[in-house]
Length: 374
Image 1 (cartoon, rainbow, N blue to C red):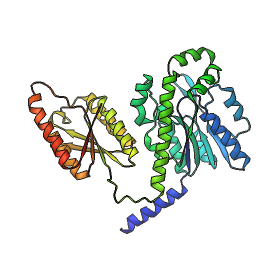
Image 2 (cartoon, rainbow, N blue to C red):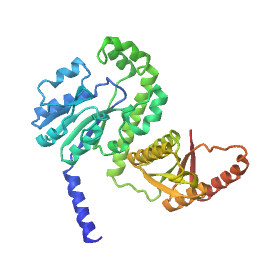
Image 3 (cartoon, rainbow, N blue to C red):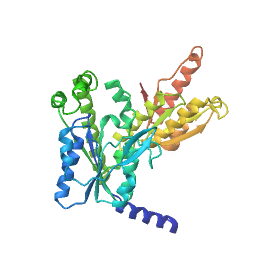
């Protein structure tokens, strides 16, 4: 290792030691008590003499939560005029100046108003952590990027505000706030989550018992997965006999299917505590001069998503997609290829099937698994 690399390695160690600790409360749905639990913890910390401040808390008008703010130091919100309206945002710069030992930051997936220092609140949290400030935050399971498809299938709702899985991976502690479906519905009917006029709408939509049960299962699995990864990373295990998995997501410049493939591949990689790659093979038909502008935009968004989920983007130019996939598998020591269903078209089907069969045989000989994702 040369002197320059030695110096950078030492600097990275110093930054890591100075970085703030990060705790995230995860809930299956709104109203389980994440904000309430954070405020309780803030009171306990304050009684112990810890310098804790409320950077941002969202009570949603819930009386129990609002009552807990009393007696806690609160950093005033920043007021911003945007499109003729006054909007309140977390004051990142004030928190950095005050530099409390611990700061409470609610609504981790929130999108900041245009013109803010960062686009997303989770990016604000990373800024605070890098400055050496410890952060306690909260997020609902439906806001986790790699679970987007599953959430949509469960609820029928497209969740727009999401956080990359890499944010969870940076957490030192992940805690699940759990309630049974019966307890949650009771809280809802008692007016402890939404105002009276919104209760029946919620019961008919997101708060259906079957939805709650599935979301609860996802939340429990997510926290268990994060704990398992923490154990694997902190303790030296005998991995000499374990196959080191590496996943490859094969994507195109289409709009929706590649995003599903990337998310599902990322979930698989997370379960195996390993990395994944997203491969795009650019054929002559999709050269810079030929590819439609919309597809270029989709492709850039796919690359961004893969990176946010901890993947590495691989771009190749070739006239032969199948041969390129096999070549990349060998170069990157891939163990599992993930792709969508092949689109066979008549009359090309008679030429495609033999090539597809040859592709599967090549993967089999190389001991590479193939997963066709729905």
